[in-house]
Image (cartoon, rainbow, N blue to C red; front, top):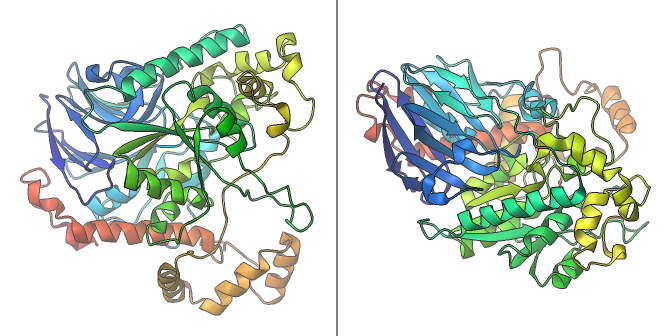
Length: 518
């Protein structure tokens, strides 16, 4: 099969979004892409890796953030991020293999939609099983497609015979000491910097970072402050479980004193007025949307062509004193799905999520051993929130010990209806039409969820609403999960209205009218 890659710019798509349609019979590979996706002969990419940009060999490295497509030696490589904050989604439809870095785009192109009576918790949280055991199927409604599939970490490869396979590689390296680990990270950052500063890029990349009073993002920002990062973002408030009236400092997560000591400018993440692009935060998974980063996303959209945002996702696992019992070093088992909730919004606003702790994550056994070694004794606090490697990374940059790393905090917000008032009314109408619950019931439920779960369940049981998911696995009263379904389908509908997918398909899809499936 001789492959011909044809890029098709679609400005209506998210800036970094793309969808590939491969006709296995002809070898024609059409790639619809947004305005900031890089295209060179034989490859497209929205990402950064530790090699010369112009070579385009992102399919051969274990240190890649973003996504892309590479033709090489007669095969096609569809490449996801090596950080488990992003994925690819794909399906076979008629005679074509469809692959995208966005569930929303694939829904729009095929006319499929998420099932309002299906609980998508499995699809959303399955990556917590690790990169070898997660469930690949995503349930959709479509007359010809039963499931989409998701691909984390490993490349999808189509050989010259048109056969699809998954490349599975465990790229672990031996790390003996803290100095070895630091040198590996700094060498990788140096190569990443050459890549994102390459003059061969059509769309210049602005490196940014996040910082807090915790360990992970603070350690990452300490590292990248010497590799071109000038600006970072911080949130003054976290979602501490302690009420502010009882412990005023518990919710403070301000990392600006640290950033200033590192010589960085700081932007506060105090929220702007929320517009209808809140949908992109809701449409990634059923987990709580990371709306804390709304202002950062808007800043990137207004001031950067493309941004590379260094984040600390997975530091809670890699830099912990103990590894998870199921983690063998090859699986990369996460502690939560934070960061993945930005997987759609980052495409819309134009940033790559460079979750730095995923570098050398396969070597977790060595890294945990180093955390517990005698050489790290000076940086261990011997409490329940103790990450000596992260602490050493920060303190050796001159940051005083008392400024960070004493209480676990988070920025993910959980709520049951959109913050934007117009979207909220649309969501209420969706719930009423599909489940019969009124606006009043949703407000009542949301109010009650502020109290301990046993009280909630008792009251709901008394009033006859005790089952949050019935025997048919319907989402029931889990309005936060229903928001995900509603938002994803809503955005897929929007793309379908704006794009004429059939305009350039020609013979590729045999003249199928996609509107029949909407």
